[in-house]
Length: 421
Image 1 (tube, rainbow, N blue to C red):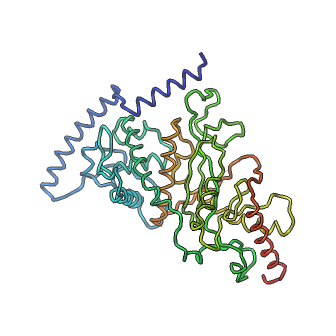
Image 2: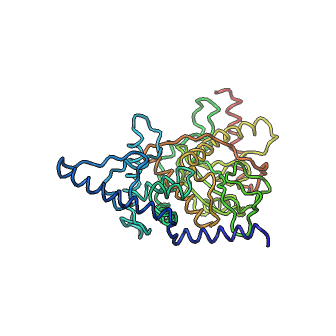
Image 3: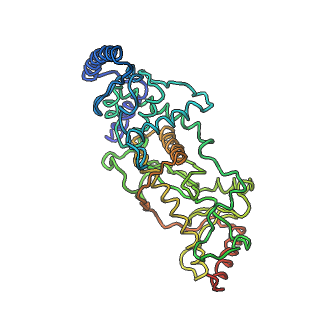
């Protein structure tokens, strides 16, 4: 029997055990018993201190952690400190506590069937500590085992708590990743071209403003059972090779606005070859989604339409190059938004899970929380890394798309030639 199938089957069984229930090892049992004794002693000491000197919080060192039954007595600032923010003039504890409290309040106020104070798990955590645990897993490349040691919970229980959190956050998708609906916000959108100086009246002549930038990124995941090559498996996927198996990643299709906020998100398997054609058809069938005088811009390889503008293929003249450069200036916005997303949620750099639905839930959770942090004014700047890939070719450029692109290119070039810059 091929060793790859044996290893795949073994990992599948282990993942199933961790997902449902994982018994304590002898070492973990001893650890929990020792901690229980310490908790009793600390609780007695705490009660004496509170009786003698009023309400005093027990101070813990950064390495000392607590059991769930003690967490209500200890402030969040004494738990794990997670760098969720780079806002200056705030202590790290204030930053992490503020993020946890904001997301906790958001989940508590959400009107869903998951609106409850606690989530599933053998050791039941309060919602605030569930948020803290889940943000820890999302923001860092940590194993369930290391987080298990930190939070004093079994790995299988942490696995279940984390995905319960993701499932609950996913219910906020329509609320937090929403397509713009305000018609009067068109004036605040960036112009299509910033290369022509202070020329006015381009919008009146037919040059649109940019509602958003369309693009995608790949999220590496573990290959499903039966498709893994043991000899070539790597803990970190630094780049996507052309010959890589399509099920070794997820396609994350995004539209972001000029503030880096996500207004559209679609997650699909790597084998899904649909490059935003669903979104293109939706915009055609619902023209009210695009306010008059607006457009989306996307790189070559996306389906062009009256609503989605794409560049000319390489090798054109001055007129086409001016048009292309006008569009290319906006692509940096999407690249930066993707970099910010992956910088804050480092688990997206490689999801060590072969279950497509669970991997999709994690990615969607990160996208939703990306907008939540933007709402908080908490922006994380990541380093832009262009993904390696084959040269894209122009696809699905219908007559209406060609006409609009030609008209816009003509207007821009005539303005440039007129010397009004």
